Length: 122
Ligand code: SF4
Image (cartoon, rainbow, N blue to C red; front, side, top):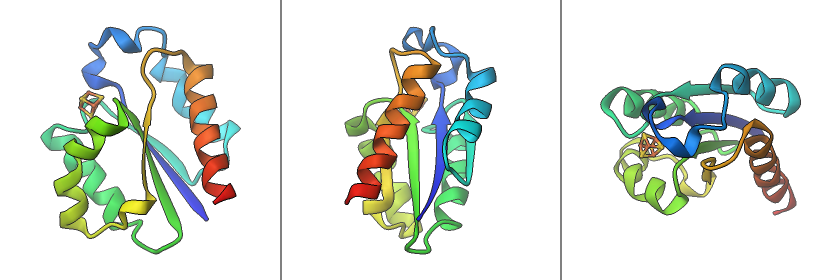
């Protein structure tokens, strides 16, 4: 099982990210977790962000890779990325949206870690 982490910091303007340091978070996730890679985009639901996520999904549709997207509420992500999932044909059960708002780096890593543990347990 492989895990790719794609993070979004909501344009860098959202107060719900005020305690998160994106300059250090990517390295922390990469070094503290067993992931293939971690990338950040400033607006995954924007045009450029959609292209980044499209590339990740298209290159990950191997039946073994989970794509964890750390961004806004999972319900919102499911709506925002529904079309992208349909277009890429990515297995929706391997698209894992995680809410990373309103916490700090430690909290983000803990949420990501718990998510991976749940995937391993299933
Ligand atoms: S995907 Fe969610 S967190 Fe990212 S820019 Fe859009 S609304 Fe904000």
